[in-house]
Image (cartoon, rainbow, N blue to C red; front, top):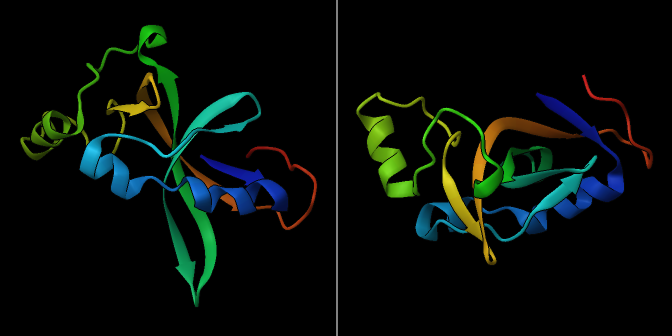
Length: 122
């Protein structure tokens, strides 16, 4: 899903990129709150030094997770992916952020709307 975000929010996303931290220690730098939904930023795409978009996943607290996919820490998650018992990606990955345990859900792309106001989702 693509989410258009205003300039001010878009410019904040880089500080929360947690790809390396998630793969090395299973932790996120922080949570991005947008439209009352929590996300973890997992990467970006850039061209000529300019960010084209940021990638992330929606997250929920482990205690509130109701999905059918068992949440797993990174090492176990990757084993399941490698044996094709789980789809590639971060869905179902169990991470920490501060004192919270979070389950990563669907992937999203944050795209700069080019304005100071929020655009609708599409």
